[in-house]
Amino acid sequence: MFDRRPKWAYSLPIALVLMAPFDLLASLAMDIYLPAVPVMPAELGTSPEVVQLTLSLYLLGLGLGQILFGPLSDRIGRRPVVLGGAAVFALASAVLAMTSEPAPFVALRLAQALGASAALVATFATVRDVYAERPESTTIYGLFSSMLAFVPALAPILGALVAELGGWRAIFWLLSLVTLPPLIHAGLRWHETRPEHAVTSRSPLPILKHRPFWFYTAAFGTAMGTFFVFFSTAPRILIERAGYTELQFSVAFASAALVMVATARFAKRFSESWGIDGSIARGMALIFVGAMSLALGSTLLDPGFISIILPMWVMAVGIVFTVSVTPNGALAPFDDRAGLAVAIYFAGQSVIVAVLGTATVVIFSGNTAWPLVAFGTLLPATMLVALRIKLRSVDT
Image (tube, rainbow, N blue to C red; front, side, top):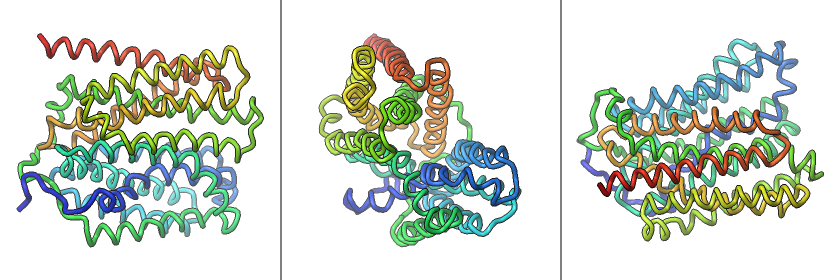
């Protein structure tokens, strides 16, 4: 029998240690693998296009898997989906390390992505189950997003070091091994949290027709898309144009992630005072101000720390203010189908990030700050207008 509103008896630090690893698996498996991509065609006896396919299929599996495993976690519970997904991820990673043929390698990368997506969506559904009405949810969502910001900066460096010491297969052995301790920990301490009143219907219509859900999802996509565009353009700006070394770039990039982590530490206090919509308004405003500062710096100064990184710090604070509260806003009406709602929430923001984020990088010059300026002004401004309309509709 499930509790109607399960409450873990864990302190926030212990809960984070329990859940955070499953938040990181999906991104880690993508980014730590990148340094090995150039040597993979010769190692597997295939073409560069097939190796590129493993990257594309991984992203596809990650997205489609959430649509599959979100409703499944509503049916059978969060615990089996988390444990099953992590086990599949660990096993697929280990077999990948032993694979020498291209076809099995491609299939196993898809299996790895599906395992990561299951663990990710069930983790966020668990946060919703346990912390829906508690201020700790703001801290958890903010820290999860901040930790994900570290992965693109540090994982490729780690992957390069591991590959240099043990070859590309060592990367996948590492992915498998680092999954085992949190998997065992979860097996011992991850109690079921699915509410008793969770529905077993897989119909997404109540979610798809709910306008506030899409507003909060779009705000989340705007915030994460801002960081995506920064991640996509910063290497070319700072390394190619500003002359940063790879280490200098990594330090500068990581500083933005550190700002996000520090902000997440205090996000709960601010959100309690401002509320969900107030936090989003301030978050969007900070992203907009940071983008305008970036435009000014890019016009008057050469690319560097002052003109690129400092404005990004301002945007980083706005990102955390936003992502710390959007899950509660989007998922609040759907406690009875939190797994499905989480899946659609992530899928929606992925479309914004992938389509609009990529479009700005393609349309504007990718070795300048203008893609980030365009994304960081147009989308936050649109969200602020949408928020104003939303608040007026509530008042009337």
